[in-house]
Amino acid sequence: MTQDDLAKKVGVRRETIVFLEQGKYNPSLRLAHDVARALHTKIDDLFIFDDEPDPVGMEHREILVD
Amino acid sequence: MKGTKQRNLYRIIIGALMLISGLVSIIMTGGEVVIGTILLTAGLVFLITGISRHRRYGDDPESDERSKKIGAYGLSYAWLTGLFFMFGLFWLDYLGVLRLSVQNALVASILVLALSAAIFQAYLFRKGDIE
Image 1 (cartoon, each protein chain N blue to C red):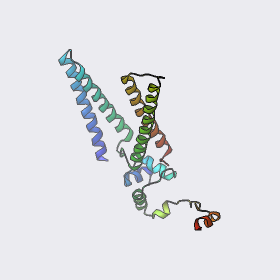
Image 2: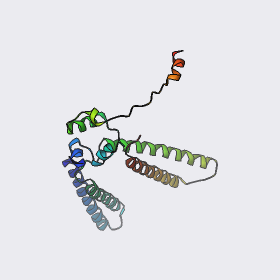
Image 3: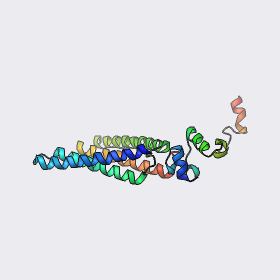
Image 4: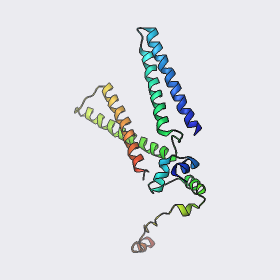
C-alpha cells in the first residue's frame, strides 16, 4: 500500500502519513485506530512510545513521603 | 474527495461569474466603478484560489486533523503576536516615540496579524506537529 492509498483510506492528506511515518506527528486516537485498521494490525504494533524517565526520582521520594 | 473537487469547481465558477459581472458593471456604469472593482477583485480571488487549490490538492482532502490543528495554533500565535504589536504601538504613541495615523496603525496591525499567521503556519507545517 502506498502512502497515497493509506491517506485516502483513512481520510487524511498524504503529507500527514509522511509525517506520521517519520515520527514527527502525534495522531489522534481516532486516526491511530483508523491507520491500524487499514493496515490490519494493532495500534500497539504501529505506534511505539519511548518510556519517559520517572519524573520523581528515588532521591526525592522521601521528601514527598514527609 | 468528490466534495473537494466540487468545492473547487464552485469557486472557479463563482469567481468567473463575479469577474464577468465586475467587468460588465464597470463598462455599463461608466463613471461609477467602485462596485465593479469590488466584484472584479473578489472574482479574481475566488478564481485564483479555486484554480491553485485544485492544482495543489486535486482529489486529496484540503484539510485533515493535522492541518486543522496546525491552522488553529498558527492563528493563536498570530493573535498573540498582533496583541503584543498593538501593545507596543500604544506605548510608542503614548511616550511620543512614534505617532501613526489611525489608518497607518490599522494597516500595520493587519499586516502583522496576516503575515505572522502565514509564517507560524508555514513553520508548523514544515515542522510536522505543534510539539
